[in-house]
Amino acid sequence: MSVVKPLLSVRDLRIRFGSKTVVQGVSFDLLPGEKLALVGESGSGKTITALSLLKLVPQAHIEGSAVLNVAPDGPRELLGLTEHELRGVRGRDVAVIFQEPMTALNPLFTIGEQIAEVIELHEGLSRREAWQRAVALLASTGIPEPQRRAGAYPHQLSGGQRQRAMIAMALACQPKLLLADEPTTALDVTLRQQILGLLDDLQRSHQMAVLMITHDLNLVRNFADRVAVMEKGLLVEQGTVDEVFGNPQHPYTRKLLDSRPHRDVVEASTNAAQQQPVLQAKHLRVGYPVPKPGFKGWFSHGEYVAVKSADLQLAPGQTLGVIGESGSGKSTLALAALGLQPFQGHLQVGGQSWKLNARADKPLRRTIQVVFQDPFSSLSPRMTVEDLVTEGLTIHHPDLSQAQRRTQALATLADVGLTEDQFPQLLDRYPHEFSGGQRQRLALARALVVDPQALVLDEPTSALDVTIQKQILSLLQRLQRERGLSYLLITHDVEVVAAMAHDIIVMKDGDIVESGPALQVLQSPRHDYTRALLAAVPARAAVIKP
Image 1 (cartoon, rainbow, N blue to C red):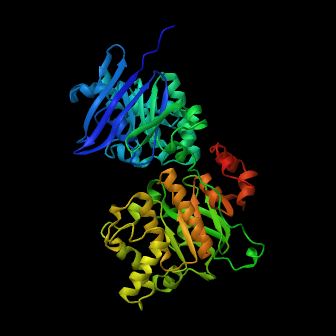
Image 2: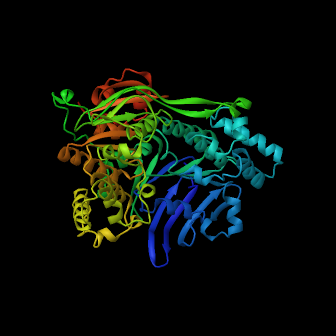
Image 3: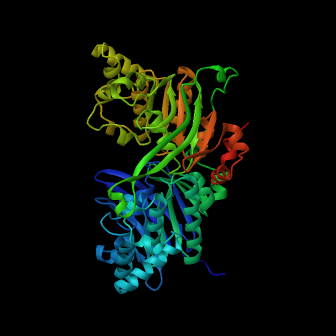
């Protein structure tokens, strides 16, 4: 019986920047047509390991061996190729799908032009032939109206369409190896399933091998053949998906597998419905002006209705989860709740209505605060921790002295798990000196320091690794129990809403299509759309318990 030679054989790969070693002696094989997932948290070295194979990591000193065996060239040592030789490998033999297509795609060229450029470069086709191939590739990824989409710029496509365009570009020259770096991280659950299904179909039809870089364990379970786990630059465990998930050997692997959200909330009391809601909306409608097509747009505007007629109620000490895909209206609903978006209908926070006037609404802003999805972009890099956390006190409690504000800031920071024992001179530090999870704790402290009744949590864990996500969710659950906080939780992550929410509303195209107690909605969904969302999360049963 003949032995199948590896398509890619990596041995003792070591990567360092200056004197700092970030990847230490990594070795693995990837067979033709196989799907291998490289798994680990941020900083584990998984992305650098994959991208260094094509020397795509600037200023990195790389040692070891990475042999690519593709006919008719035969075995080649990738790390020994010159930059000119690597240009013949990139795109033709080995292609890459990057994590964020909006930054990976050139905003100055259309999608079709960028795909056609790859085909012209590697296959020598005419511009017309390359364009026709680009349109056909877009069609193969399931993009509607591929001829028209080929002429669109990246910003004119949705997130899922941009990701499909990246896949089309990667497959332009039918590579034998595809490096997929977190290809579904920024996508909704249903889009994730679509992209995974597309990659699976294309992998089989093109007989490609796929090296998937990810921290999403559900993705690994449902896509990969084998998994390799990295921690702090070391490959600590590898094997088939069934072996590693069913019987993990390394403590770090067990830690990752145990990092899924768990439900730990105080269930609603019988008199909760009798208390005055912290947030209440009836027949809430939010629309945006949009230009009409043609010359009519010169004289008048149409309207896009993002939220059509929403009724909701958030009780004290409870969490209302709002789930739905991008474009469903959930973020617009959150902006209206925060008094940041004009609306029609009835909306009250703490028994008071928004006036949509800065001076008149100032007292109400103490009642409801917000924690955004990405703490790195929501926290000013020019402000110290003291400036960030005490800003709300300066606005809402101008009578406090600087010493009192500092004392209150330190107490709130300690409440979210940041102390001067851990971080000397904590108040004098800047956001870039903290990790992603620590920055999210800073964002929480900034919101909590004015003692609000409610927080709007806009995808609060989607940018975090699974272990950090679990820590932040546990922190939010503890703060809710201790402070009696109410949360309006905006998310597309069904596992997060299952762990946190008392009640759920499901939004689609601006409508609330289903609502009710969380476990009832998640265990016995009535609407087809809700069932489709839940079907995209195969492992949900482990989180949702009666």
